[in-house]
Length: 513
Picture 1 (cartoon, rainbow, N blue to C red):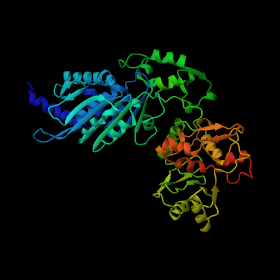
Picture 2: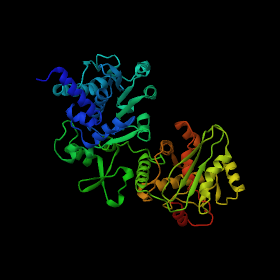
Picture 3: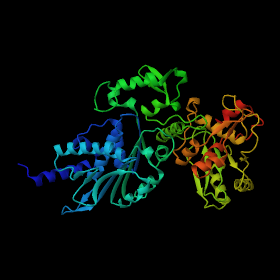
């Protein structure tokens, strides 16, 4: 007969084993069945400080969040030789409303804990009290509560060796709450946010653009119940529901019209373009951005994926380098240099100027590229960039060009030859847009960069009364993102047509795109 102490010893050994593989704990102890995408999320939470999950309908985002919370709750505390808690663990579950905590998160937690205790009586200690799990240690607990902007003091007690915050319906949480949460992210900490991507602004939306977060989409097309056309995981979205939504929310398209950047997808033997409902509810994607947004974030993501693939392949560029730079002036901290080799941007180089003109240093950043006489540098010479340009000319570099966004773009056209531009800024920005558009097939590859993602997706355009394209004033962009779009400017500068007075549109596009 196995004694209680022997059982506890076995469980302790098992917990040591499970702590190395959280998915095993979920399978063995919590008796939960996760699909591959959900397992990948658990692996991310185990190893990454911050994880964001955008999800379609009934894809189990809250269930996988509950599993992750219990993994952290029971696999991170440490005890000394006498069985006394030596490394404490605190887990907080929150949502925009108390009802969501009580009706969504807490029931999942309770079911999992009860299932585990039925199989292993000692593996999930603690009392299930209201929305909490309370152990015999004051510093080891799981608690759930409403995210209240007027009660941010509740977050002040979440300092621990191991700390986890789980936010469901994360797009409905204010910046105030996220600031309070991030103030507690120290030591061995985790932040997991899960949400339906129904709005394109706010903290959750930015998280899906940020390299601070490991990012996941739970796509209902990939759900096991849908792929296998039978019930595999109870409660998960099923094949018939998805089929109905494909028929009613999507438009059949031809192969020639397929554009991954639009969210187009293959379903059985057909190709389809989703409407916004399908994007959000089925694909776990944000609704399509308004027509006046210059660059959809999906295009940036595709360019990031292209870059990651080239890195894995050990890609070495063979084309000559075009360098775009935006030099910091008074009141700005970052000078940004962007080298582009055809379709490939290896990195952004940044110099922290602390609000002071530093022409010598920024000029030096260009020289490593300009030593190749085939390279060309395009420097914004409005403001401090003029000093860098002059310094490089003094050093004898003749492959440096002054880029002024205010100058005329008369005679220049877009990729289709249909559109003209109000000024050079509009031309350069639109050339960048054409380059990034997956449908055009350039294979643009840029490194993941939070700031560029934000700048690109927060820039708007419109037609003037004369039919020419104009980009909104930089001041308007600054109002939204609280800084200058330096990375966007630097990248756009690489499309500056330095000799456009002398060559045709076709030659320009061939050279610059």
